[in-house]
Image (cartoon, rainbow, N blue to C red; front, side, top):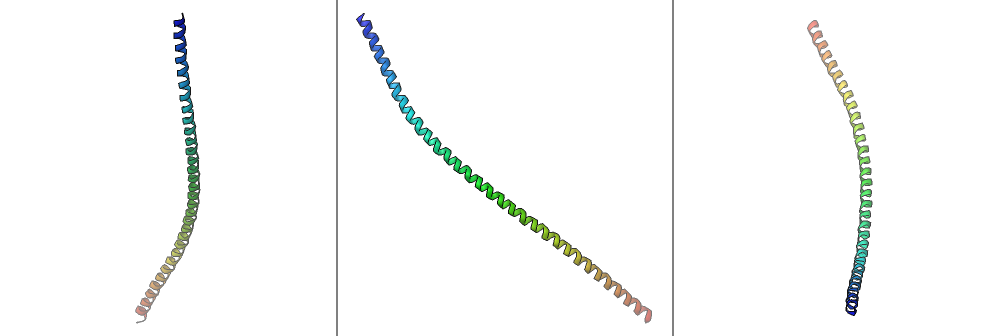
Length: 115
């Protein structure tokens, strides 16, 4: 009987040693988990910084797009103004050409009639 008790005590001692060993390992894993959590927190903070920078760049792009839209609007206005001036100049030139042709015809008819 004492032998059985000795075997049981030996088995219990082995189980206790295994449990203690597992507990030590779990503590090591806990330290590792803590380190990993700290690392992930740093990475998350860096991602937040990058996202903030992306938001700033997007804001700057929006400002540049607004400026380009203003420039394009000015160019369109200048193009319309220039087209109106060209239309007016072309109409004036056509009037002068018609008047010159009419005057030339009148001179030719006068020369033919009076000479």
